[in-house]
Length: 287
Image (tube, rainbow, N blue to C red; front, side, top):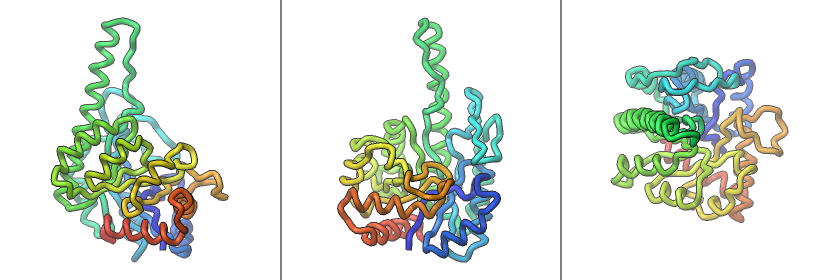
């Protein structure tokens, strides 16, 4: 049995063949956790999971790039669908209601993403100062959102799926404060940071999630050094398709290629990595 711990079959990219895709995955012994990125996609993830007796689960949360900050325009992506141009304000009661489903196994994906942060100009001191203030406000709003959702996860006793891009030091600082007892439960999905950062997450008890990005970026040393019992595999479909995956659109079946690549890097056989990562997912998400 395999499990894609971070998929997006709840996105518009799968509107035309979602049922068939899920059935194909289950027939091939691939379980799925669909991660929400805002209320609409979180709700969809829960609705999808509730249709299946076993093997399909949901995570709910507000991704930082969908937060209404009033500072930058929310980036749209047709593959995701259902965007609110001005972003979303987090309503804990709405997400708490979604979490009443037994198929909700995590809060996520949530975190910090500074990729689209306001740029700091060096044209003049006044411009630089103004841009710095906008940047600081942008980061502060994301941190506030993250803390609200960490609070929700703690209240519901659910693990967390963290998204982090260009913000690892800030995320690590927050997690050290919020999970000082080292009993944290969560995963930093699509990890692309440095070993120093990976080591910090591992020390705090977090898992690292690896997907098709490992075919693009050199993460060999990090995968080698990360204990197998702390690795999760994922696809982040419909994004990050492995180069050898034969289908045009990425989907959870590609998790087999991720497992194979991790096995090669760690000099292990496929079955060993498959069994370990499935066990890791079951323990983290309580499924």
